[in-house]
Amino acid sequence: MTLAIRNLGLQPYEGVWRDMQTFTQQRAPHTPDELWIVEHPPVYTLGLNGKREHLLQACDIPVVQTDRGGQVTYHGPGQLVLYTLLDIKRLNLGIRALVTTLEQAIIETLAQYGIRASSLADKPGVYVADKKIGSIGLRVKKNCSYHGLSLNNHMDLRPFDRINTCGYADMQVTQLADFGIEIETSELAVPVAHAITQAISR
Image 1: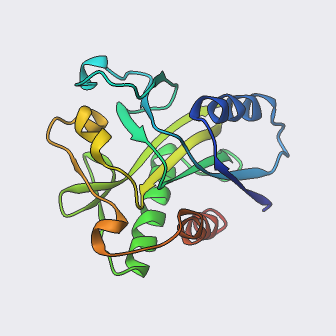
Image 2: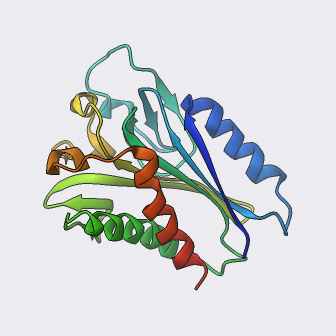
């Protein structure tokens, strides 16, 4: 299996989203799968069925209505975003199995840094105690996935206070820096991408 990993650095959300759509639309049956590693400038994104009432306070952070699943979330510098452009039919991978794969990649990575995290059956994503540290949001077209995961590393978490994160009024968030972990986001991407690669190549 060929899997290309692209590190895009800091890129505006909307341009990368459009590039994912184009890549997915134009890919052929033998197009190699790709993982895109990126950070975004501050942006709120609303999922396909996202409700604007979950945006609690107006501010100067832009809001993008996107085509992933889920409600509202925040992306900003210091957060690892990893997009999974995968032919899930070719990989014989269902959507639920892909979500679990992404959750486990985050959980395994956090364990390497001494952070005990878990997933919850009724709320996609990854949690440390009751605080969310990783989010999952996907779209599937032509049996191929795009969008992916985000993992809070060392970022300003205050913009989360202006939203009902993932549609939950009482959702608290956390990040690696809160546990005394200091790591570059590009470096944090390595074990996450490795875990995903290992899981989908089994």
